[in-house]
Length: 259
Image (cartoon, rainbow, N blue to C red; front, side, top):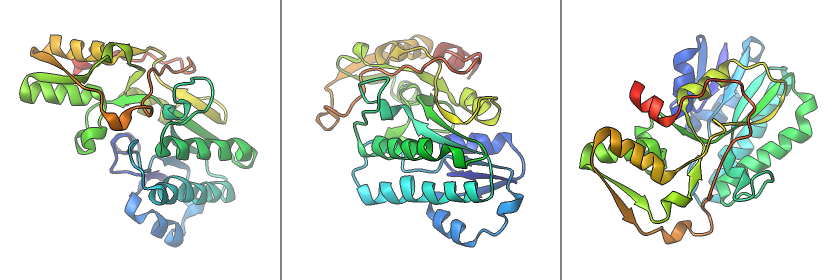
């Protein structure tokens, strides 16, 4: 049996499509699951992807409850029954000082806190990997609304309205974009030892270049809009994963051609 948390979420749903014998755990039921589940000895692997993922969320109690408290209780079960586990961390922990931990929002702080706890307790696990996701995009993001990746948002905008809206200075903001299929490949099958790893393509592309790539494929125009006040000081200027995984990552243009 494989446990997958957050199974209705974007990445978790893709994992559930790729593996068999899944026991799916949704966020709303996660603490009830911990209280009532009795078959830990039958669990072969845990994929922990359930979390409050909105980077603009300011409800600290809610973030602590689901991102930290539940994660730590789940990890203690993995330790008790010596179950291998892979969990979703985030490149947001780096903030704008890549190479060191400097979270810019409460979501990123929660991920950094979990990573620190894992580093201090790694010796207690049979096997654990924290995978710091960079900007994951792909089919199945529709429910995420404004939290969807720029790739999906821009493609939706240009198909529906013929125009992509991007922030001013978007040519100066870079992200390491990685398609969900590549993420799932690595989450399901990699040979690295326990540790916390970057999971990205190791290439960085500006928001403007992504918008222009989509515009060239579908036609339409690009509209420049003011940078939101509520994101000032809380927005990463650039992300780029360390090269860790030997994997043939798709570029955004390659993914668009295939989808």
